[in-house]
Length: 143
Image 1 (cartoon, rainbow, N blue to C red):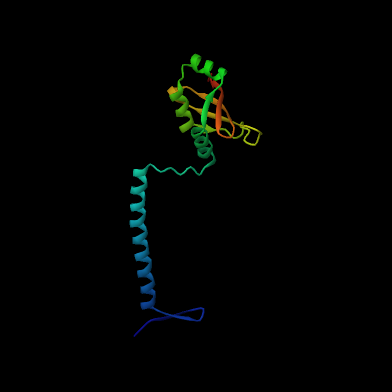
Image 2: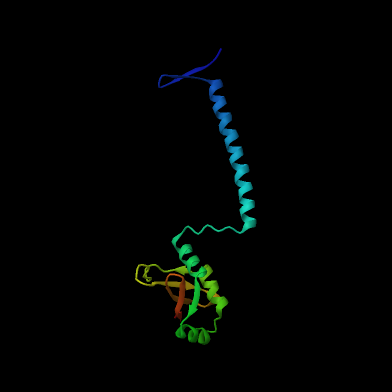
C-alpha cells in the first residue's frame, strides 16, 4: 500500500517526497562543510570585505598617498597624536556622511570621528584622485 498525494493535479508518493528530503539533507551538509572550509581559508589570507560605505571610504583613504597640512601637523603636536593614532582612526573610525561633502569637485571632503588614546578626535580629510590630505584635526571636548 502506497500513500498518494495530489497537489494541483500532480501525483506525489511518500517515496518521492523522501527522495526530495534526502536531496535537501545532502545539499545542507555540503553547504555547511563548504562554508567551514572557505571560512578557514579566507581567515588565513586576511581577506576583508569592505562593502559598506563607511568601510569603502576609509579603505580608499588608507590606500592613497597620505599628506598632512601644516594645520594638521600643529594639531597633532598640541593634542599629542602621532601617525599611528591617525592610522588607527582611518582603520576603526566612523565617517560622518551628514557633515561630509563626498560630491564636491575636484576633491571630496570627509569628516571622520575616532577615539585613539581615549580622546574624541575628528579628522577632516580632503580626498583627491590618489592623494588624501589630512586637512584638520580637532579634539572634541565633552562638558
